[in-house]
Image (cartoon, rainbow over all chains, first blue to last red; front, top):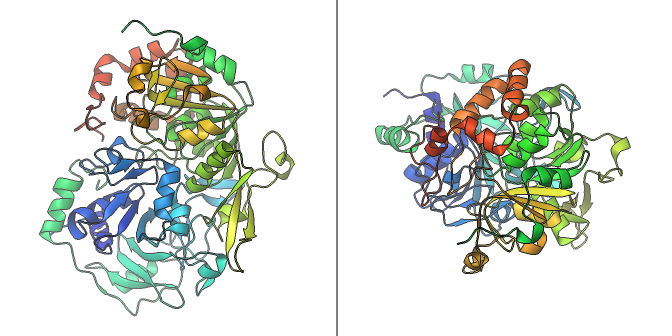
Length: 252
Length: 325
C-alpha cells in the first residue's frame, strides 16, 4: 500500500502513545499525530493545547493551537496559565508533540534563530510553549524533516531543553522529569540511549537504509541497533486520510 | 431593548480610544493568540494613526503583532512566539524586521510571558518558574545593556536562583512582572455596566488586563447588564477594570472570534502572499490601512458574502466545512 513520509510520521508517532496519556499538541504534524493517536492508538488519551483548550473532540483539524476548533465541545476552555498547570502537573503523564528548526544529538532543539542571535540570518517563531513543554512535561516526541542542516552538531540557539549535555545533566540543571523520548522524521524513528542519552537510530522506514539516515545526520549516529518500522496498515491510513485530515491541510 | 447607554462615558470610538490610551512609545499588550480574537479594529487604527516606538509585550499574538511590526509601529518586543499557525509558521513581517535589525527582541516562552502578566496582576515584582533551565532563553539577553533599567525595561531579563526552600540542585527561574501601560482585548460581549464576557479560550487576556494601567475592550455587541448578571460565572472582567469600550462588530477580523465568526482563510492567505515582498506589503498597508477611513470601510472591503462565509455556527463556535486551504 502506498503512503507518504508524512503519513508514516503521524502514525509512527501515534504508536508511542499509551491509553490514558495526556497529550500536549503543538501545530502542524504534531497536531495531526495527536489526533491520529487518539483516533487509532489510544482512544482514552486526552488531548490539550497550551492555549487552554482541554479535551476537544477535534471533529475538524485545527490550524493553530488557538483555532476555535480546539475549543469546540471540549471538556473545558481555560487560558495559558491553567494549561501550563496541566503540562507541569505531577499527577499526569503528559507527553508533548513538538517540532523545531534544528536538533542536536541530545534532543535539544532550536526554534529561534539561524546565525548570530543578535544579527540572525534567519529568524523563526521562537519558543512559544515548546521550551515549557520540554521543561515541564513527562516527556516529548519530536517531528523533524531529516537533513544535515537540521540534525546538527551544535545548535545556533538552544530553545527547548532535551537531555542537555547527556548523562544526568538534565537532573542537575534542576529538572524533575521529562526529556525527549523519540524523534520521528521522514526517514526513521530515533531514540535516546538510556545512560548516555545520545540519539540512535531505532527504526527506519521501508526502503530506507541506515547509510541514508547517517548521510542526512550532521553528527555521528549509532545505527547498529536499528530495525525496519512496521508500515501503516490500511485502517490506519483510512482514518488518517478520511477522518483526520480530509482537506489535506497538513498531509499536503 | 432600547439602544444602550454610553456606559458612563466609557463607550467611545476606536479612534478616541487609541488617541487617549496609546501614545507613541507606550508599553502595550494585545489580547488573543495567533489567529484568534486579536483586537484587530484597534490594531488597524493604531497603524492608521502611525503610532510609533511601541514596546509590545506579547506571548503569541500572531496577526496583531505582525501588522503592528509591519506597519513600523513597534520598536521593542518581548515575545514568546511570532507565528500564525499554518498560515505563517513564522510571522513574515516580524521575521523580516528582526533579520534587518529594525526591532529589539527579548525572547521568553509562553509559560514565562503568561506568568509575567500574572505577576503584574498580583502586584508582585517577580514570579518563579521551572521552565527554560539550561537553555539560551535564559543564557542570552536580547535587549542591549544600556536599555536595562530604563523605560519599563527590567534590570535583568530574568534571574536563576537556588530554591531557598530546598537543599541544593533545585534551581528556579525568577521572571520580572509586566505592568503594561495599556492592554487591548476583543470580547464577544460587554454589558451596559461594562462587564466583559469572553467565550472560548481566554488565553492570557485576563492577566494582561489586570496587570495594565489602562484597559480597552473592543466588542462584538453591547448587551443589557441584567443579561450578563444571569450567569456571572461566565463573565471575564468586572466593570471597574475597564477604561474604554469600543463597539466593533467583526473587530477581530481576519482572526476568529469564537461562536461569532471563524478566521478568514482568504484574507490570511492573501496577507501571507503580499507580506513576502516589500512593495506588495506597502500596497497592502495603503489598501487596507491608510486609504481606509475606518473599520466600517474595512468591512465593506472584506465584503458581505465573505463575512457570511466565515460566520460561526453558534453551537460549534467555528464555520464547519469552511474552505481553509
